[in-house]
Image (tube, rainbow, N blue to C red; front, side):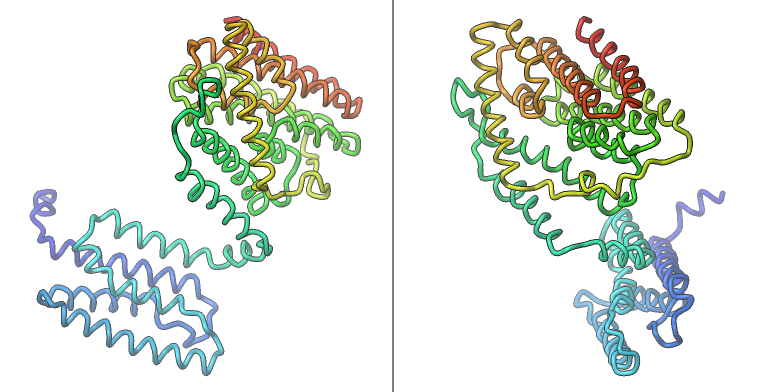
Length: 423
């Protein structure tokens, strides 16, 4: 009977309940967030916003098609807000307008609920509640911005939103079976992953340990991260934690490759899902075991310049990546033409000692006459070779204490990688 009565409730009553609930939630959040504020510093909190929402509801439902009553009420509220803001500036020297904007949003909840889907109204209220609550968080974040942050963001918007749509999606030639659009899309994808890692590293984990460095660095470049951490091992006491971070960086490499495969060649990405995710899980488990064995003595890396967050969107880096992409596309075409699939496997192993991303992306985006299992095998061979190279770097550049745990860790990952290649 109760459910039946709910179904038969008037839409106006339901909308009234929503307006009151949302308005009260906003007012309560303002009160909670300003418990220590001076009297008169706010336009109002819970009761005030409840009445603002109710006023907006009443005038909206009473208005005709011209919405005269509703607009008149909004104008009256705007005058009151203007008087309050003038007093706030003259008496308190406070120029913030957050309270005014929140009051205006509350007044407009009624037409929003009536004319738009409920999810949109809930999303608006959620945003208001979160943004009001995160005032101190935004202050902390803004303090970490330097003069180059928005230039960096502008660069990313430029390469992704301006340059990319202008490029042709037709293959360059028979010898280079990829389009300028695909080449630059690969640059955007790699830059986007690097930019995300950069933002997380700078703003969320500035005081990072070695394990976090391995996690985030692996998103950008597992090889560069492994080299940096290997050098750190000479001055760090906890060799197991450094080894865990290096293995975790390799695990993130597998995850990054899988995501790129899904973006640029969905069929190849699905085929590679089991092997790449298996290698990621194996690497993560090994890293977890090594980190657990290291104890609670966390190795800090924020004092070392090599691990500081750097701008990942330099145009020379993007240009170099695009040139490498073209080179590997051309090289892959001729290797397949002259030596077939065996030649591709050898090329994959050789390329593994360099930056494998341009080569792998050329495989994912190029229109080569190869079967998907052959492509997947080439990807796994390249990662196998890349891991052998990283093991050599760590063995050469790291301390003697780190060699044994790294050898065991890389040995297990390389063994599983090899078995997947053979299978």
